[in-house]
Length: 499
Image 1 (cartoon, rainbow, N blue to C red):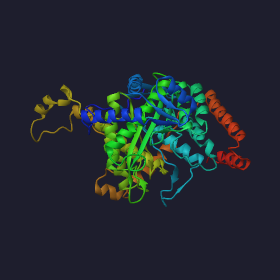
Image 2: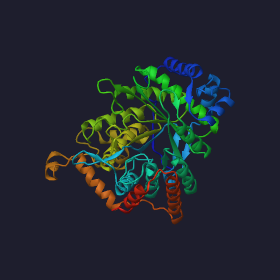
Image 3: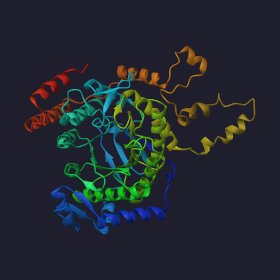
Image 4: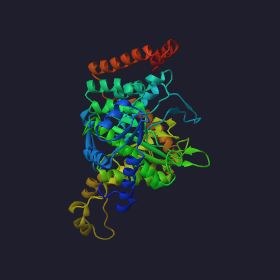
């Protein structure tokens, strides 16, 4: 099992106990009086059968406080994620922090900075890189490169998931679209892995039919559910930070109630993000906004109160369209704040540009940031040996030094974080070796990894499971007229062009 990073100290906080209570009570009030819209008949009946005030015509569900708080108590504080290789299993919850693969819709050309759909090979290479990165703990294949050359939209998630399990043995997660999750869940069970379900709620206070159907699928399979609570302040929620925390908390609690009614005790982690709308440009400032960082800390405090695992996204993307200074500081600061405030999972390596771009080189650069953040979380070890009092007495003042001591040889690698691609050379060496910056060094490391890293392959039986999943899904979507004959021809050709 991967140990991830263990936070050694009390999490960062921005809200007092009185302020947390006000947000909690406000959310319960909203749920009881205004309620949520749920566009799914089976879910409406489930709510009604458990004491909710349900208007079936308006599809409005009003949740009593007692049921909300009872459901929060039922939600586990930890759950296990089984990976294809047991050494990559995860235990989500508590003080442990894991990094997830980032997201980005399209491939970005590092020379022109223009984007385009990704090829089969580019997705495969990205997964090989992800499998190799030591600070990337959950290498979900489905969530990036959602725009693929020749792949019909209805098959993109499943093709990405297939590529993910083929080229990485790390833990996986999955979204939903036109029932694709049902094919993935069946395959995951046969593969013996846990498939976390990403389930996007809609602000304000709405659950569309597709997400609720997917909730049933994941929950009834016994797989952990990950409701996504995203709110754009001033558009989908109040422009005030505390107001959007109330709204988001109400939406989160409604998600917990629904999932725990479906299958009491099933694992859950809440993915959350509250970001401001840029009132000058009309865009969502999802990358780099300080308000996003503040609400991340506040929401983490609420989830700690409820003892429900947290998944953050402050720092998972940048508003920059390049891999540049802005990209680095926006991603690093949001990620550090997420980790310090007690998140358990964090989307990170590889994505930027408002979720529009992804590149393997950025995932390598981001992995250095992840390692730095992880080292900070682990804090300072204080014991008899690390205090080194006897050694300090022995070495004494100058000309004494510590370079030739056994204590130094033993401890320096344990105490110091060493980035893989940062430029650490002194100036004369930097000149002699070609004046390479971090981006150039990351490109070199990418080529090295692709030439040398060999992910653990699927067994023949596992490969057959993946092929069966794709075959069944393709046949289903062709029957549903979601893949035309012309699209099918292009699709098959795209799968052949892997080199």
